[in-house]
Length: 197
Image (cartoon, rainbow, N blue to C red):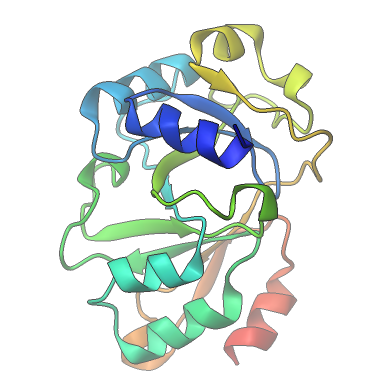
């Protein structure tokens, strides 16, 4: 069984998986499964009020699912993804509320450049595979043992770059082209600006 098949099977069964993203090791579960989401947050020790991102493994799948996004925002997404950025988007349909924390009008979106998992057909709720506030893991062995042992699946993707995604706020982009970098990470703010200018 391929890594993508094992990962998808785990998610569909209500499991929590440790997986290699294009940045750092992550934790994933089905974004509509409340019990799985609670387990993921408990493994990290993360407050439920803090939002997570929804990750798609195909840009086409993300754009098809998020059909209510305006043309300007969709164009920006196509220029920025796949890649090591997390985009904060308007969420008028209040999709994936379990990932949105206290603000259901905002959705965090990730589409990694991740060939090994590109065939995964389902979106996931994802967060970094560390204890809340702890160091990001660039190797599977750096994921805390309690998280690895508490997960239903742990995929080893070798050593990763080790820098988390850059967080870009596109919530005002459709109306007037406004955007901001809320967390500098794997993609430089200048590179984001070049794409969105």
